Every structure is written in C-alpha cells, then in structure tokens.
Image 1 (tube, rainbow, N blue to C red):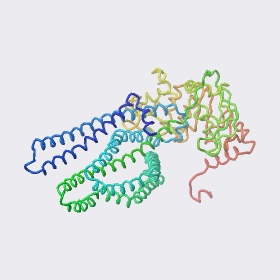
Image 2: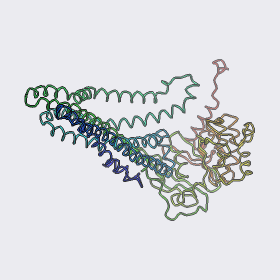
Image 3: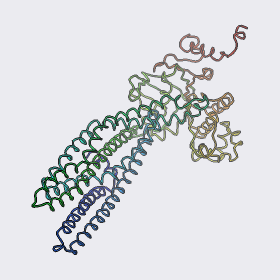
Image 4: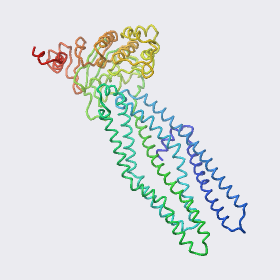
Length: 591
C-alpha cells in the first residue's frame, strides 16, 4: 500500500484511473467465470435426456457463455486502457520530477553518482513502475476475486469434491508463501544493486575501449566490469538453484487437482442414485480448477513486480531526495572578487575522514594562487568550494567578503569560470559549444574568443568551420583541441574569477604551448585559483599553497618555499629529477 501511495503522488489528474482499472478487472474476472457456469448448465441440459431436452434452453446457455466470455475480454481491455493511461502519467511525471530535482543538485553530486547509475535509476527503474501499474495491477483484483468465487462455486456444486480441491490448493499456497517471503525481498534488493553496478561499469568500459584497443587487451583486462558480471551471474544462479525444488513442487501440485478429483469421482459414482450428476460435477471441477493455478501464478508475478516497483521507487526517491544547495533568503550581490577561506572543514558524504581540516587563506582580487601537493591532499576539493560544488561543514568561503551561501546561484556562476582536466563538449556544433559561455555574445566576440584560445587553425581545417558538429554524427577532436575550445568558452564568458584544475594535464607539447597562451589571455587581470602538478607552471604566481592531508602544509612564493627546504622543496627536487629522466642504454648513462 505504501508503494501504491507513493506512485499515486505522480498520477496528478489520473488518480481515479487506477481504482477504475481495478474495479473493471474485478468485473472482468466475474464475467470470466460465467462461461464455466453456462457450459455446466448446457451440459446438464444435454444430459437430461431426449424427452426433457430443450434446444431453446441449450441455445440460451450457449449464447450466454459466448457473450459473457466476450464481455469479460472487453471489460478487461478497458481496465488495461485505464491502467496504461495511469502508468504513462506516472512514468512521465517520475522522469520529469527526477530530472527537475537533478538540475537542482550541487555539482559535487555528479562526482559521486555516475552517469550509468543515474540513467539506470531514472530511466530503467521508472520503466519498471510502468510495467507494474499497467499490467500487474489490473490483475490484482482478478487474482483476489477469482479464487473467492471459485471457492464458493466448488462448495455449491459438491462439497466433497470441493474439499478434495482444497488439498493441493493449500499445499501450493503454502509453498508460494514461503517463496514470496523475506528471502525474495532481499534478493530483489541485491538484484537492483547488481543492475546499477553493471550499468555503471558498462559505461566506464565503453569509455575505456580506446585504451583497451591501444594495448591489445580483451574484456577480461577490464577487471571491474568482468567481476561485476560474474557477481551478477553467481547471485542469480544461487537464487535460482535455491528455489529449484520448491518451484518444481509447486508446479506439480498446482496442476495436480485431477489426481485427487478423478479417484474421488470414481468412488462417488459407485452410488447408483447419482452417477450422472457426479460425472457432470466432476467435469465442472476439472474445468474450474485451472483457474486456481492461473490466479496463484498471477499473484506470484504481482508480488515480484511489486518488489521491483517498490525498490525502483525507493531508489528513485533516494536519488532525488538528496538535499539541494540551500538558497539565500536575501541574496547579496558580488562587489569584489577576492577569495577567502576561513577555518573551512569539509567531509564528503559517506566518507570517514575529513577532506579539508580547518583551511584558511586569502587570495586578493586580481592575484593568482596556486595549489600544489600530493594527490588526494584536498586541492580539487578547495577549488570546487569556490563555485559551490559543495557547502562547507564548518567555516566560511567568501568572495569579496560575502559568504558564497549568501550569493544567488546564477549570480555566483556568472562570476566564476572553471576549466578542469576532463573537458566536456556537447554533441552539437562548435559554435553552440562556445556560446554556452555567453549565449548573448555577438559573432565578433565569438571570433575573438577563438583567436584568444588559439582555435583558429583548428576551425579553418574543418569543412563546416564553426558549424561542425561534435560527437557521433560529426567530428572528434583530440583532448588538447577540446581543451582549447573549452578555454574559448571560458574566455567568452569573461568571468572575473577563474578556477583552473590542471588544465594542461593531458595535452601534448604542441597543444600545451597553445593552451598556455590561451590561459595567459583568460587569466589576465583576473582572480585566479589554480591547481598544478607541473611545478614549472607555478614558479611565477603570486602565492603558492602546499596542501597535504586536508591541511595547509606550507605557504609562500616559489623562492620562499625552496628556501624553507620543506615539502615543496622535496616535491621540486623530485620533479626536476623526473623531467631529466630518459630512456637509454647503460653505456649512454655511463657516458
């Protein structure tokens, strides 16, 4: 009932469609039982003897048998129509509301929720609810109505044969109840988890295919994907084998009514007073008892679908109920562009250790601050606090003296540009990709941004120029070329604050040179917070912070930090040795 209540919240103007579908389905079940009764009456009329036979009565029963059968099908069709209309509304609303919620999530949310998992939850899980509402729910009324009516009928015609029917029915229901218990619910949770894991790993594997092909590896080289498939296979196989004997027993018993009815019928026929009636009743029971098997199997499928739908709704709402960033009640405008961290502490959701621990520093307007340090120290976390990917646990991040939490989100985004290692270009034209930085920019401004980002040569080599599409139906660019177009987008935006997360990390020497020139134009006169692993790129910045284990280990200029002979000096020494390292023969090294 809780699952149905949750699903009804997405039906908006179609909330009455589902009860209507259930009512029509119940009526359809009653109509579906009527042909059995009319057939029994027709056979009884035919067995009445030639003198008492009324062909008008035979025709009457025959027509009513056919009419109720057709009416049952028609009413069931109407029930399915209503349930499908309700299901389509739920499917549409769940997707719409989910995507609306996703758009409000903090940008850090997407670092911890892969595209494969989000697609699985919003797309596939919503489809599960559609199948449940459109197909299984209308069968609920029939699954409840038909056994009740059948039980009444089997005791009305002959209580002795009716009791015989209850024996296999009770055994079958007992077996089915054990199969639909807590073990089935635990399996459904594991099943949904496995599907999400496979979706996530499949997306990652597809993205990694170029690497796999370059190194002549197979699917087995992508251990995570391979192991996920194996875990899914082992889990489903174990679950299937667990129910092998119960399911076989259930199938045998639920179709075994005749093995009790026929021997009992033979014994009852021995009574000379009512052999014809016993035969007729026995025929009726043989016709009716398959209804029990059909009803119980419907209940099994309904319970399975309910488990899937319940888990799907739960996962969808867990995803979309992630708290969005709080909006400022009275947002303040940005009047300055300095950046200040004051006693900032932050822990990622679900993590046991702090990512940042009491971080404090001040970056004056128009200056450049570089973050360096060991991997995993917290550099990227600091950079992402500025555009408010996450909110701090304690402390304060401010721009121009104003807490970023007191700045309207769109206003904050308009004042910050960020360029990360992993560039994202949309599968549309190059012009539209650049205009994401400033949709209202003029054609001259776009051309100037291309020039500044060193993209002119790339555009001139493309037959369609800026109208060239990126992606499946268009052109593929190298990582360095994509980064230059991302810089063009940032230059066009012309935000006063620039956050750079190792923008040249994956560029070849030629592209790196071009990117460095573009970065020079992008950061001119701006407040710049940059993350760098190549220490030569931070030699001339205004200030350097060395971040280690979520703390500020050292602070100063390049020369000051070298003079201290601390962590930065050791990193500089290791960097110098790495750039001087070459591959050669022993003789060359000895020489």
